Length: 82
Image (cartoon, rainbow, N blue to C red):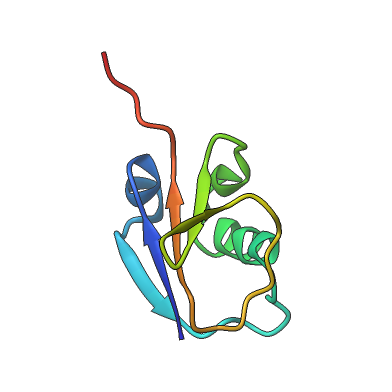
């Protein structure tokens, strides 16, 4: 099972802070997972925004990493403030 964490505005868009799922068939990489989640949660491509950072097991990743199905994935949008 894979645990997915949503932070900031993504938590509001997805309607949840976290979820645990089995990887759907054919979803074997971060980009495939983002595409599937964008569709499943009607996120209008929010996870494809280049400013959204991806973490796997609490480490930032910058490439399309293969998934084994037992990771913790976090999606972090930019933080605004003033």
